[in-house]
Image 1 (cartoon, rainbow, N blue to C red):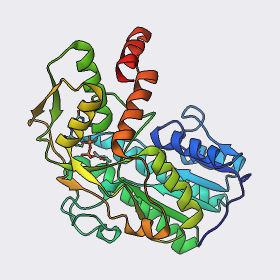
Image 2: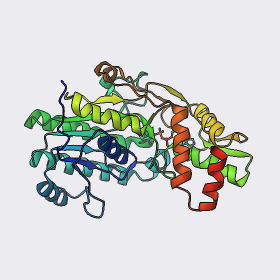
Image 3: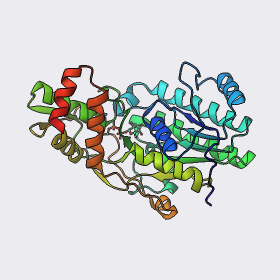
Image 4: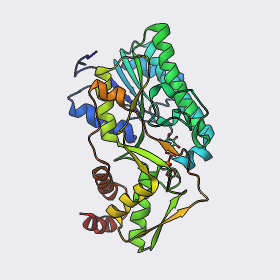
Length: 327
Ligand code: GFB
């Protein structure tokens, strides 16, 4: 079912400053949407139902992209489980409920591929949700994300709300978190190889054995898929969003090394966790609707590194220096 959304409709992007939200805003602007609503964390605490309901009452968004959340890599997930479960459960609860209260026409909720069982059959189909135990390093986050899917389904069943859920694979791109203790693997590797290059270090430390397999999707592809789903998908079931292509962490590290600092050797720290052994999504359902990813991993890493050089580094001299080395 294809619905053309009025380009002047009131559209709220919850989490607009983050990796995903900023990409969704860029994509909506490109597509000609003129009435985008955002609120900073200081203006609106999304964990507070009173504040969120008041904001919805005043702003009456017709469409909502619920892409806000507390997110992080394997270490952050393991060491800050309370924040990951509390923040995410609250944010989903308040926004979905307010969207229902104040007549939002459609809401897209963004989950994560970690909702699936650790031992899921690969590639992972949507039907494998709740068929087995979760990966322990991120079960708190996964439980919150599963609750978000169920929340959307419950409001659809009880109130007829057009609330849909999309499950993206591991994401990367501009505005990512490059902090080594809380980031995901791809931005962490960009920073580690970059720092090693500046220091003239011989090797770079990679966590775990390097054998886990992960699929990566550039956030601009994800944003394109979200805008596509808003106009082309209205089912009860969540839908996977990915590239359908995975590789080992060793292969990923080699790709980042070749782009950022080809002279570096890889050193694996096996005292760090591997997490899920493999996680690649079955994207047949989305492909059948007519959407596929476009940004190839090497190109995406190159442009992300360029963004990192231009936006993340504190010393202007180093930035200029390093920019000259990458171009
Ligand atoms: O991206 P990542 O932190 O999370 O780690 P997950 C992926 C793999 O890369 C793991 C390895 O096997 C890590 O051990 N790795 C190697 C590194 N070097 C590094 C490094 O320097 N930093 C990091 N972070 N990893 C996350 C979940 O799982 O996936 C989240 O924790 C979410 O909840 C996200 O679902 C999409 O892919 O293991």
